[in-house]
Length: 321
Image (tube, rainbow, N blue to C red):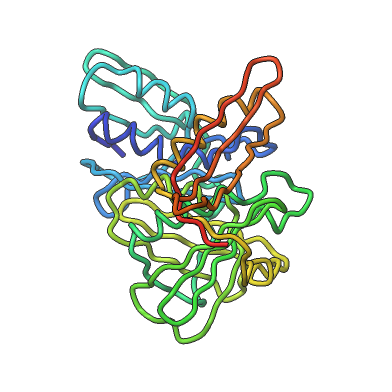
């Protein structure tokens, strides 16, 4: 098979699938990228057997075939090329590819596509469409709260719930809890709840920068895998098995003090305080002052690093209680 494509598109496609390439693998082929023609486009796929990412780029394709080659080497070489158009020729003896761009040329040995792990077929379960902007925003504000260590595997995932015409994302690590809901493209007939690895959703958030208008989420009938279909990419992932904590019981139902603060000011003050906190105890103190004699309330954001200095930022706030 002979492929001709823009170097920029190939570079972007390789970047899209890069996070699914196995860093250290007992199965060498999982450090490769699978290249194959698909309906007049070049399809690139990488998998570490837990998450698989495929992306499609525009290309002129002659003939048929598929091959896997080391993803890192291919990516590094493509990014070093000077021209705009890349030609890729698939070879069978030995297995690999021949790449040319202007007067640059290289051959990269590979592994037969038949040895590449099959990507699970996800079907039979719920399937919904979610507006891309709403989903990406929710991911940005929730995924960070998931645990990063494996002491409690269930907390390394994000609970994804579908009910009526809404989706809800929830993540917690024992110290933080983040929950956000948004609208689905259409209502679901029955409620569904699964735990998706936070690392997978971080990749979905990153890939949503491709200009997708919506995300199609499909679950398999067994509840063990899920697929996220975007405009030019697809992510297939194993689901986390276990019982997610009842986060609704952790949400406060009442409060003694409530402060309303300008968001941009709060972000700026917290960023400034974090500079000192990271060199100190890692703690940022928040002091709420309700005000008196008709004066407006305030919130102080304070941090300290014993050997460096301290920081105190005050924001106007509307305080109740």
